[in-house]
Figure 1 (cartoon, rainbow, N blue to C red):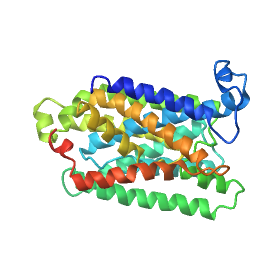
Figure 2: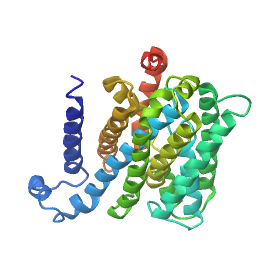
Figure 3: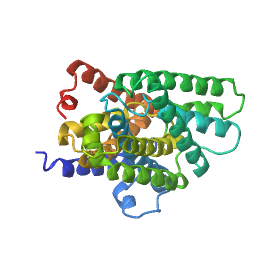
Figure 4: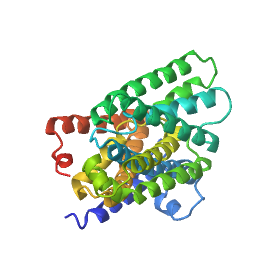
Length: 326
């Protein structure tokens, strides 16, 4: 079964993508004919296609970001929304937007998101290692505290501002692909590709890091360098995604664990499969977000939370034997 799982994932992505293009608030007549004539139908190619493409890219980026968070922390519960990465990217982007420096989805906003993500993630790791060596437990606790603090600042900033577009900024912060256009895809693509490439390059070192810092060191791994590169990959992938579509919780937790359950612990497989599964989940979640409550649209972060929260509960209840046997 494991041999055919990658092909099944790709097939599900194709089906989900076609389904996402087909459904929406506006019915498209002769859908199959329009699908094979790129550019002819404005709703299909100028609105839905960029949104679905963004969902695939953002989902892939967040899936790999979650894997890097878990690898760097050596903790099954780590993900961008827990270690402060998403909150840092969101805060930096919101500040830049409110000061009129950038617009949502622009290359400038993506750059701000990546910088904010890197600073917040670095802060979490520095604070977690102040009194002693880096502890997985301390990382999660500190990460939750950093995330709560930065998220509160974002909430206060968007609430106090009197700008006319403050409501749309607040909605974006909960996670939404509604503002995505074809012009935003290049920035998301660049950060996703860079983040995934760095993650794939350090995957063998993360396999050894999962055995513990001391064991990885004796196996010839530069532990500090590997962890720094994992944080860079995490910040680039998650920062680019969050700065464009807002905070999408739990996707970075769910995708790597589903991939790990199917394919086992080797990170080279997990990088690719976490990307594929993350893209699949986000396409399905976005389709649900814009169709379940028509004509209204749900924040996609709420939908992915409904998917990811049960997985988090299951991890705690089952004590996650997959991680203990690595």
